[in-house]
Length: 379
Length: 192
Image (cartoon, chains in turn red, orange):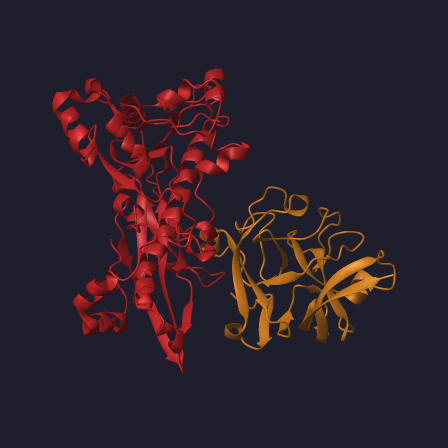
């Protein structure tokens, strides 16, 4: 679900209608954008569903809400003789609870007099960016939860920290993680991200389908899952442009040489590329099953927007209540294009994990330091 | 439900400043247990007082409990361990679903001068006017918490080790054992 302006409250929409799209378009030329803002990739992987209070359960201990989701019960068949009876199985389906929490924009405020100093529609820009800012936090939460699923599967197999060194030593087990082909060839563990190879994607697809056992022979991953979508950074996807004639054949190679790799599929997987390199860090590639095998992504009611003016002070805030849960943690696998372990205590691991929440939205421009042209020195 | 351990009496909740910050385990007190799991030995309780450091909240204290749980909330250590750093009131119930997801503690950080009635306190009904400090306590359930304790309960001026301790306020009315109204008035108190 895209959080468009239509989803916020009527006051905001009315103002947009009053002022009209022409003014909005003209005004957009009056300022410099700092960075690209995208819609939520979490919503592309698991489509967002709107729920209302009646769909949720409350707690006897506190005033927060969950949605309880059923998980398909296990079943099987068996061959018996003509006189035989099948084994009995009492049906005992599992279910899990998805907790809801709030994602809010900051509480913005400005006085009317200072607002007049802006030639761009600063309030509207912040309002519209607030929606994208909120889904950035949602994406960060989503990725943290996805990473917990992967770590959970790895822990089931008692795998050590997933580094090339430990893989070569036979102590790290690929239950839900793989290292890239180039990372496996690295002489020493590091967090330098290496180029994705065609073979990496093939191995990643196969991992979801395979049975994987731990060192004791206990099957941890049961397989029989089909990959559907791959999530990666745009900068990692740029390495598709480096694939050779051997990978592409001459038609795709000539297309790629001209336009870059423009398809939204590769090796049968739908590719979601994101520019949010501070949330999805370079070198991490995830492959998911179809959402019905993985989990749910809910928004409680609608995105809310509040704006008010008291005397000369204007303030506004947007928020949404979301719930995400993954009932089948085996439905996501990860490719790491670096050789060190993101799940260990290596000092550089922060480079491959989402940045702190407060660090999202750091600015590219250096205007606050006085660094604009022609203000900077010219040599 | 809110109010099991703490009620804000003056002013109301909406007049207070709050911060939601991640929680960092204090290994000495919590070990590696999950503070947001309601069944964990380190579950955060409403009414605890947390320290703020490095952009996150954590429990103070330097040692695990060495006393067994009793019939009421009591000191967890043979010698009281009042904190020296400023502390803030954790105002969310144990195991809330939203906190389980966000993994953030929700604390009231000001302004000072608000008044609350708390049962997360070690005091007697005769402790009116006592300053209160944050100590490691143990609930009847065995859960270890950072709760309030009156100056009398920790032995201020009567056996407490020398040092400068942080007091979060004073008892305006001691309603009884483990039940007092507290006016927040942070101060550093030195025990000679």
